[in-house]
Length: 269
Image 1: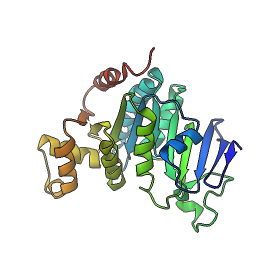
Image 2: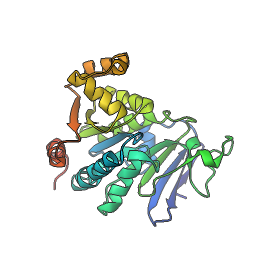
Image 3: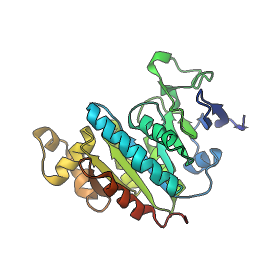
Image 4: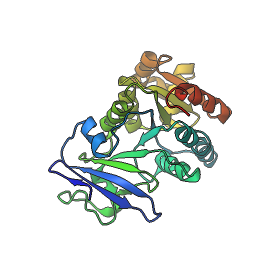
């Protein structure tokens, strides 16, 4: 046990793979600064937020996205000492981020933020007063280094924490958001990340929300896409000032160069 208060409990947890993570179980709304401090993340540096999912992806697309994580995002985070923030669960692109960190034997901080009523941590009843079935919960991804388990009861309640903790952490350092695939909750994540001023790369060709945004920006809209005024307004407001598009048909080297240029001044090598 590292710390205990009426608002939060902080402890270390070792997963079956041997990875030890700092866990922050929040009972009440801490400030974003207090959340970072309780996790031991008080020294600002560059950050990356990964949002989205892997729903309805073909096997070929999943392989390509997995390569994007293992060959680009994780190595860039390792090289430039970037702290990565995501949803922390053992599913979809969040799982891919954790696996990519393990694949390269990375040492960068990987911080998951999730509503504690929706995740399962063996041996720890995170919401003892909340009625739920363990079969309805999702495991935490075991290659993460830190978790902030927030008091929200539904998916999406973590969205403000994800955007604002990452923004508070990076401060004046370079920061970026990566959107892959995604649905309604990812749209909320994206809007909040854009509202705090983060540059965002949308990975077109990964499906769903990412493809809808790309289609609107490039004028290749379907009747279903054009009905979504929220996405239309988002694209009109933030492209090209904060949103850029990376097509999965492009070489991964192109994305690597974009991120190198973005983070080059973030940390002395």
